[in-house]
Length: 552
Image (tube, rainbow, N blue to C red):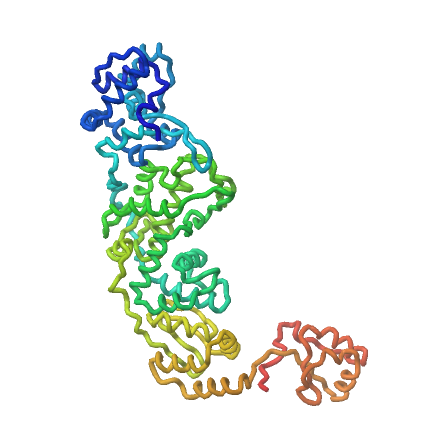
């Protein structure tokens, strides 16, 4: 940024004498260049800077604090929106109205003391006008490197924390489920719990943790992740989320669609929000609305360094329009803060949520003790140990409790058909097609048997063990099917049908006067029978099951 001398260029001599008066500097220069040199030499003194800063009116000091927080510069439009305009006036009007004595805004307080300058700077989106503190004046400010230590918002009111939803570590179970589904070649697992992290968001999180690449689970990282204690595995996901440059929460917010080529910076934004959250008291219910509005007031441009509210093309699905301008801050920037807290931080086991009523949106949050440790990158030692044992039935059903080792469930899921997920267990069923698919992926039936024998709560049913071993040796020896059957009163009719053009629609015979016909060929077979002089009834069109189970 320009220094003080460069920033004072272009001001008339009267303006420079006003600065000198407000700083208590004696000046006798007769031209602007000499005045700028005298001012610069006198003003750039740390003791004098501290003295002037401490005598600033409260509004001016708040404006200077905010500008300093942004590393000394802020877009002009954002600065003036928050701290008022600097009125344009000629020398005559200025000398009559004396705005430096009767400022109309915090911006004018700083402007006439040379703490505030105005210039165009290049940005990735082209030149933009900025408010800034001269480069050599910024380091002399007594608070030029202060940290964001102010706690934003206030504790939650009783009504805001009436209905509590504790956080949990279910994301680990969901991750195991998704990894197994992806390994089977599915895009998403069936029957996902709507209260869990959305599948696409979880997919992006696993990619950030380098557990999947191009949608494919990576064997060694997945093995390490699934075998890790739950506290370490959860910390791994949290660290991956905090450090990711690609994980983009803004693109995940329900009801918003991001379009166009503009770019945001999710990692910097996430870091900023986490810094503001870091001073919120842990294990204390905090008002979500108050926290969001605190950011809106103090740091509205937390995700828009240039204060640009016009070039992002974000469309609202509910209103079917683009949300432009600062007027839509709550629908985009506020929505992002709420999504991070009530979405990611809750799904990752970091914050508990509370609601005024079950049907309403979250109104309060609490950073748990475990959550505080996770945000510091620490593993949580006291999460549930995975010691659950599986239950195997003689009918080929496998019941895996939620607290069974995730690595065990991951392997079982790859061998089986997936049945309904219960609140306390996952259910799988052994079938020939599922076994065939597992073998095609390089898994061996012996591995399943060894795994079940080791992890089952009771000895495996002998009949199931025999059936599995027999399947491994001979493949499928029995099949249950639904077929369309043609039954005739006279075997001679079947012989005539086999000699007709409809013979190609006939399948396996089931006796002298019964035959399987190909699915969808009923009408053609009926037409052929009619030509032979027989009317045939099609019971499949009357919601009658065409055939009972046939074993062969």
